[in-house]
Structures are given as structure tokens and as C-alpha cells.
Length: 208
Length: 296
Image 1 (cartoon, rainbow over the protein chains, first blue to last red):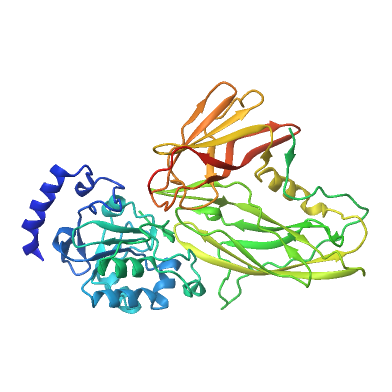
Image 2 (tube, chains in turn red, purple; image 1 turned 90 degrees about the horizontal axis):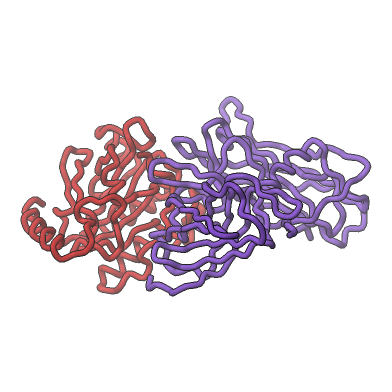
């Protein structure tokens, strides 16, 4: 992953000179669809650092996570989230779950325990990234768990919003739900325009 | 200026009987608490109702200190309460009538809801065709979300009894005050105010023209949009005072997918204002939006 770092830095500098948006340098709440997704670097539960720049040339999904939240549980207990993680993981999409819960608040676990939770629940994301000071959450203005972002190989944010169109914590709401992430990835990866680029995210508040 | 409420004024009668109500809140040994940190009751405003004439029931939620539940538009997070009615044949239930909420701010996440206690009203109409006096039992499954630093889904199986007769309807004395207090917090239609919403770069400006002096205190007035994805729920709303009018600046939601044609919601005033013979804290807003459409 590190081999992409130098190319990415040059690209970012170029972008900073040419682009009006300053999203790439970590301005709060600056994840704007159609613009560069804010750059970040976070350590995962196994101690490995991942930066968005490492994944330039890849499709990336960011999923804000809190295992204690009933809305998150709706998607995991049913296998709904994992099936998406697997489907797109197999297509090369880099799917990251991010936990911005502050220490002591719901959703926060130290790395080893977070891995235990992930194994229990069967999380199929590439990695769970730990953002306990909330820096990246605030950078993306992550409101809820789940809150989803889709980033293309050029580093552009294509989707920012809810996972689907049924803002309920009840398992029955999965039936007939329109999954914005599934559709956005399917459209974008086959070269089409994303038709639904944003929607009001739903879930529990992120526990900053 | 005349305020209109969403349901008819009730008439007084000779006697009352207490409605039967059950709450799904008792935790027993080994049983899961289905309505954690909160209790629910379904309370009929009257003990008897006439065929074809609506009466009011209140879903009364009492929340443990520090816990909150949500308004019609829950804001950034959460979920509004919902009622699934199991009505006898021919009975109709209206939409929930929501007292105006307050902001619940958790860092950058701003929601709209209630704490302590709230009563959500529903109008029920018995069929016109009932001829015999009878007592019916009406049940409902209520769902809500109760949160503090964690969120817990809650539900309760509730029921109440109502006597159907030709006698004039009598309010239950035990609940008169609770219903009156709840009605004070329902948004009122202010027919003496001319309101308009104009699109601007950041969102919208809601302008209110009064045919009288502006209330003394308008700073802190806050507009709660009734739908998600229209406005930024937590953005500061600047209130500007003019001559016989005031305006509130509203910020567009970054999650909006289309420009709304109408601005709908509740304008909550910092203090009670008097419109005609009625005092209220909240005004219903439903105005068309004018101004240049942006490309979304």
C-alpha cells in the first residue's frame, strides 16, 4: 500500500493548487459529493495504519460503526451488511468500518476486544479503523451509525448518506429496502452516473 | 385572528368513568423489559364518545431522567414514535399530533425530541352507524426509541375502553390538565400572520409578517422542519427583526436531493405569544418556497 504514497502526495499537491475545495486537508464537515474525499490516516484493530491515499486507484467504502447501536445490529444480525462487504470485497472494493466512539462511550472497545466483537458478529470489512478522538468522524461530519461514504479510484466522493431508504431499527424494514450503497457501487463501477448521491443518514448518533 | 386546532372542542357531560389502560412497562424477573427507561400508557380524553364524532387519545410516554425520545422529524439521529392501531370495524384513527420538540445536541449530531414526559395525540372516530350503546376495547402497538448515551428500541401493547352512546361526551377529570398542557404545545395555525419562504444561497429565509406588533422576545425562535433531509438540523438560525415582521435564516441540508417546493414544519417561539384569544408557543408552517431554483 505504501508504494502509492508518493504518487498520492504529488496528486494531492496538484489538487490543492488547482482545486477550489480544501477538503483534502481535513477541514471539518467537508465531505462533499463530487469533490475529493477528505484525506485521513487511521490505525486498525491490528495496529496497521491505513490512509485514504494508500487506496488511490481503488474503490473505497467507509461505514461508520457502533456494535451496540440497534440500527447497526439490524444490518449485521440479518447478515445484510456482511453480504455487501463480501460482494464488493470480492470485486476489489476496500471496505472500512470506522468507529469514532470516544473511550467509555457506546461502541468503543480497545483493539483486541473490538476484534472479538467483529469475530462474534462476522464483520467482513477489510479492517475496522479506530477514530476514538473523532477527528475523522468530524472531518466527514459522520452523524450516525451507520453512515456510509463511497469513494472512487480518483479519490472523489460519490455517495454520502444512509445505507438504505428505511430509517428504522426493526429487522422487518430490511424487506424491500432500497440499498443506496449497493446501487451506487453498482452504477459507478460499471461506468454510470450515481443516481442517488446523498440521503439523510439514519441511526444512532455517533458517540463522539 | 382565530386559532384552529386539529380536532373539535369537546362538550361537557354529567358523569365520568375512568378508562382502562395498560402499560407494557413492568419488568419481571427473567422477562425482557420491552419498554426500557420509559413507560407508555394509552389514555382516552373522554370516557364516552358518540357515533361519528371524533375523540382524542394520548400516547403518554414517561421517560427516565436523562433519556429522550423523538419528534416527527427526529433530526440527525433517532426515530419518531409510531402507533399501529387495532381498531374495531368502521373506526378510523388519524395521524399523530405532535407537541413541538426541543433540540437534543450530542456533539455535532442534532436531533429533535422530548424528555421527561410527552403525550402524542391521535383522533379516533367511531362509525356513524353504531346504534346500540356499547363499550369497546381499542388496542394499539406503540413503538418508540429511547436514548441517553445509548439507544434502546421500546414497544408496548396498549389498550383502552370507550363507551359509545348518544350522551354528550365527558372529559375524564383525571387527565384534563394533561390534555390541556399537551394542546398548548401543539402547533397552532396563525391565521393573522402572513408567512413566506424565499430561497437563498445558504438555504431559505422564512419571513413572518404580523398584523400587529412583533412579540417582545423573538431571539431564540427556532424552526423545526417536519421532514428530514430538507434543512441542516443543527445550523444556527439567525432571527432578524423588522417593522411589523421578523425573519429566520435557515440552512439547506447537505443531504437534500431536490429543492423543496414547500417549507413545512413548526416555528417554536421562545415565549408564549398571543394570537387572538389563544396563547401558544408553536406555530404551524406550510408555505411555498419562492426564488431561483438551484441545480442540485
